[in-house]
Image (tube, rainbow, N blue to C red; front, side):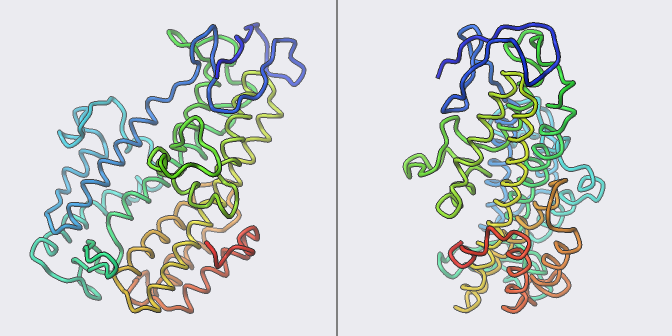
Length: 375
């Protein structure tokens, strides 16, 4: 949708700007002088990087050896092509956008090393057991997954883990902050060689990490499901219960419109909506996978249970990245390292522990209560 050109004048963002304003469009499309003013190529590259890392992790599930060095090379995008492991070239990377405390703790580096070691067992056909990493069969599909000695699926720890540590972290702790879209950020002069202001571009980058098409909406058509990537895909999964697609898209579109209109107050309102509902999405997805795990355990399907519990663990972990989170780090620690199995060991998981985790999340996020068993 073409948007009327915005007149540029010198001045700070106010709610009483005399500049020409625009109406809120129906899609995340904004233009200036007949050309798009939206760009987030770095985010698009990083989404693709994670897709290809996830595909590489799948080799371990198939009983192939994984290379720790290959994973490190993809993480830091060595030589601009992930050390030859990416199908494309880029000057971006995932590592330098990862939540700093996770980098300091070597969270993902240790997962890569552990996965590579575990894949040696997998390649030798060793079945995982309590205390032994290896392959375990997913009963519903007959396929196998590579899990750690405590039953955690490496592919989920990497994919969903980086969805939190990079994508959520960048949305929450970088691009939606006052440092990037606050009242003192440049929003008059265009960036050199570009058709956007610094403030517009920063907000676009926050949108890019969502992984949504520009016309994403509720009741998203099944034939276009693959266009919703990572967090947008999970938003689509929570759409029936919460109308999450429209909530997040409306906030993004309205927030970007507020930037064009130099309306800081309206922008702040939309940012609050994004913080609140992205956190709710992570909590709802955690409950969804807790429900799945309970069902699998009741059926005696341990491989399926470890698969969904690994996803629940990673989505619970994503909650820690929001600086405005309602849940405490202590509550997350209880859920992830005790309720999901004493001493962080999935082989110790019980229905009581899972139900305790679910109850904690529902109590903290009361929006989940009416649909807690339907998620």
